[in-house]
Length: 551
Image (tube, rainbow, N blue to C red; front, side, top):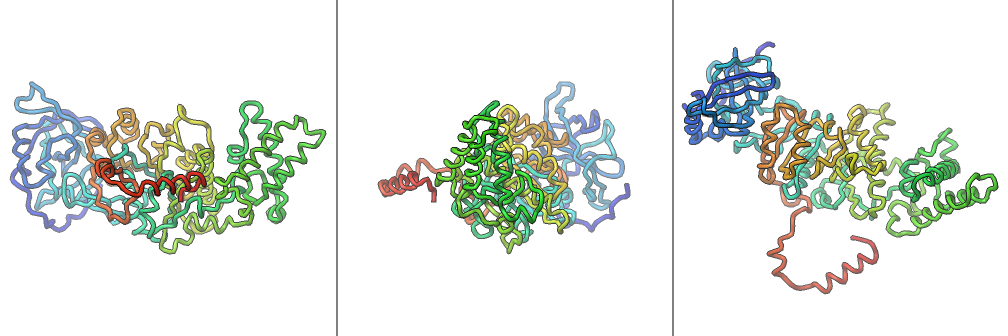
């Protein structure tokens, strides 16, 4: 591999005397890492160094460099243990991160590359990595990127995420409740929106947290203004909403609904212009027409069934039509062909400087929440498929509480939303659809979905099962960082995968108050010492409760 041209001498202060002395030696080498013997006295000397990176040398999660032929090899300390065979020393495991050339004048790393082509040999000397080294290693290489925080333990080295690999190969943001996960998601999305004001981002928000964060820079949609027509559902989604039976009866009901739904769609003049249509074709139809067709089919003598299945389906449709909670989707006012307008509004086509649409589904009845998310997700994927002849407009779909919609086999109910999100995870990048999963329970995600995410942003995880699940999905070189996941502070994370040059531990930037989601925990000690206005608050709450309206 040709060596990179030597850059100008960096302006960082020269390395301290402590940084120029070895702290240990290599005792064994494997393909992905090495065993080191470290001098505990030298590590103690380093703790007083003014450079925070040198001061952490040898500690678990820190970076050190090993001299190899023609340059340096950088690695991360995974663990430590005392060994009586090494007097005054400790044995540790080093995970290889990458390699770089040595600057002739300063001895620092430059031209850093991921992966290893020059392996050390037993007896090779190990040195502390300096902040100047890390600045070279984590320096962005000219690709489009956003910065989201600082590299631990330094106060000023910026941590960048490369946008194209981050979005092109999906990403997952993981973290236990209370670690700052929602604020981190808002920070990353804000930085992407600032970089790409004509982007196309769809976020599904199950708790209504994010409208507060994007009120100035996004399109906010909820049950009051979503107006998503029922006829956009495909046949599988119709079955989820309109069928209540199980077992053999469900198959009978499904056959009846398939026949009648196709007949209802065919009554629209659009069906004539399109030509051959199916039950899945997004052709508008009237719910009243569907009920009339069910009634007529029920009256036929050659129907092959009793009238019970027809009555069952018809009763459910009428129940939903008359329920005010479902008016955002099943209103009689949503029969017009508004598909192009809706897609433009949902996917920000054009964006007009507001590249993100926040879809707050907290007001959607729980019985059909998963179906609504399925329709939205499928619209993203289907649009990408059918627009391939047009100029490419990549779309990012961000799903909060992803474990609710893409559960593992143990918790799966076979819903349509799980299948479409799994398909996006596996096939989306071929069509320009990126998936961002946010969850506090990664172990409850469907098997294989997390492994499809090219970049993993892991905040603190308290549950051992979640830690093991994430560890299995991480690349081998990041294992040392992973062991630090339970010890991360709030608003800290480990980032590894395609979106970064090498795995890094990051302290997220502060986010302006107006750009934060409404996810802060209430202060019991403060709020329980206040009084006033309780009667009026209860009265207003009861009114909204009875009207089944949260706004």
